[in-house]
Length: 367
Ligand SMILES: Cc1cc2nc3c(=O)[nH]c(=O)nc-3n(C[C@H](O)[C@H](O)[C@H](O)COP(=O)(O)OP(=O)(O)OC[C@H]3O[C@@H](n4cnc5c(N)ncnc54)[C@H](O)[C@@H]3O)c2cc1C
Image 1 (cartoon, helix red, strand yellow):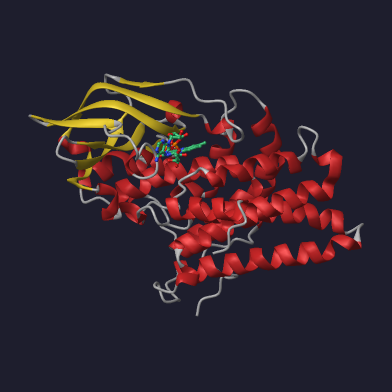
Image 2 (image 1 turned 45 degrees about the vertical axis):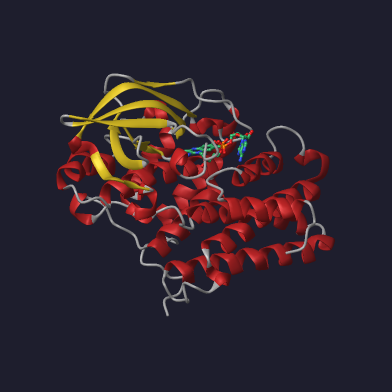
């Protein structure tokens, strides 16, 4: 059995530790300044090879295993949630391009994405968790002689304004869907002003409008098929990435409680209990991602882990605020930022069963 303390990538190397320290030192500033974008943070990712994590070796990357990738996300998120979240959206785009069968498309994007010369992101929530109750698709597709014509609004795109490519989806009148690597330089693509958010505003998330955008067949990643996201290209939607980030945030909250506990022994029991849950989740994600447990065991399912990770993020951040008292409530204190950031996991890529479990927990309705 491989150990989650000993992944192939050295997460205890000096370069890695320096990266985490730099990210952590800047996270407050990144989240407090208007119109900030994690540019220098992405330069550090390029320097340390993080941009190659999900890119196959033949295009310049290092193609980490999913267990290593997930642990890497958890550690990065404990240093800076915002930058790590932006990275996951960029990686989601890279993984879908890398997972397709069109060599020309991969050659076109992957080497440049790996080197940091180009930037990509995803806008796919309208095929999974956003606007599912509406009758009309958010983005409509029609066939043309040499590709597709897209019209509509992509409801959520992180870092759209910085992106050269948006991996997105569109739906035909008959319900079939396509997944596309959309070049943002195409005529008819326009990004709305990024939204002001409860937290993570520096992710520069906003809507993207598509007005008669012509896309060539060569940009096709998958489809047309019904429910294109269920093909699971590039990892699919049931991955543990969101949970890794929630557990990463919990690490920071728990460390804040640890600092307080050094002077206040009454916090020790609280600290140990939360830390135990955090370690157990880190272990479960490693085992689940390494395929070392029965995939049908509900204890290791993505939904169960996500539910527990969300709960820990909310509880540990609020415990950190309680422990740091009024000082923690002052703007700029890590505790107030963590409490706001923890709320993100209630809405980001949150499938119905996970949202329902959270609502039941809030309403104190037993399982
Ligand atoms: C900061 C941030 C960044 C994100 N970045 C990305 C990204 O880069 N790429 C990406 O693909 N996605 C992204 N997402 C999208 C995310 O993963 C979810 O899909 C999104 O949060 C779902 O929320 P929604 O408001 O779109 O949901 P919707 O389900 O569309 O709900 C919108 C509103 O509709 C109403 N409503 C909801 N359900 C019903 C119902 N059954 N009946 C009647 N009315 C209803 C409610 O009033 C609700 O407020 C991001 C989200 C956030 C918050």
